[in-house]
Length: 518
Image 1: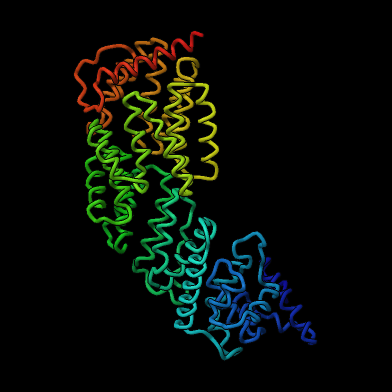
Image 2: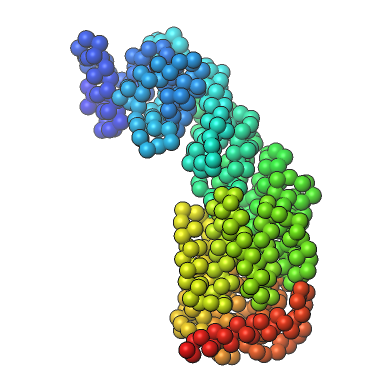
């Protein structure tokens, strides 16, 4: 009977064997009639064989991807863990001893349990109504929030685990965001970008209601988009974020989060005017991302060649606005790699605050600047940057490190141009404008060191067609490296005299030429 009813489904066979053993433990001999059921009916029979508390717990944990006895007890609304301790001994409860929450149900069992109450009417008298499912989901959501807020330190595993389960519950059962708002801010603060979005909802499940978008739907989409932007073209990121900001389902500061990252995506795409408007919106609203948005305005001023304006913003940023990194970003285009050493202070500050993403980004920029001045030291700086990127998902920062390696080898390795074109293809796939400009500047440095005028001219042709006027001063930097005169005066507003800037870049090229000759 078991073989015929299973249709070869291993999970049915497993569950049937478990029920066979449970029946035999009662002292009764299992009979074929005990298994004359399809899979949902077998689940219903298994539910009926449990004690009332165990049945209540099993329905409760069917809401969760994974659980421990404390979370199961809180979700069920029980005051004692004894029933949970018995339930985890049941053979249909799986265990992963290395998981954050070690116990879980097979996905098919979960979904069947959440729809099986209609099948148990004639077997038990404690079927759950939609209101019961709603109440259990609310208890689970609260328990997850309590577990996250009670955690100590920057526990990313706990944060992402609670986010995944909490988002799914809030989305499927139309719950208020509550603690998920603070958890979302904690998620973005480290710039690590692990996947946290729950699976697509099954709107047919108990208590899930209609498909109308809610704040939970929007937050799940927002965090998913922020993680996926490391793996897709920035235009797709901008499209998704624009849809979110237009829909208006995100409350308060979470709407500002979406606007801020949309502004960043548009800057990456070269849409500086749109980016500036978004950054200003966030600054004007004065929320948690206001310092980051001021940093964004400083970046946009720098890209436009307005260095004094960018420099005036730095003292207003502090650590929240990553003041040291912005300072370094201002000085390396001046050819002043000594003052660009502010990146080291940025990395140290990030270490102090325990922000892994910022630490890696600052180190990548430090490696890039040192690669122009000291190829031997650059080896160590690049290696450190690669180490700090381990376990992180930061596409632009990874590209910066690879460009730094090309700057280190510039003038000495004839393979630099070929490697640069491979890297250019990856940058364009990502839809990032800034790394490609940095790549061209590095390539121009290589050609200037080798005194290759035709190749330098090719780079200038690319750099002299900037979008929205951004990076227009890069062409002048190439002329400075090569010791040639630009056809027109630079529109950039430098902090130092332009002649000083020109002298620094020429000195860097000549020093590398001497190094290559030696």
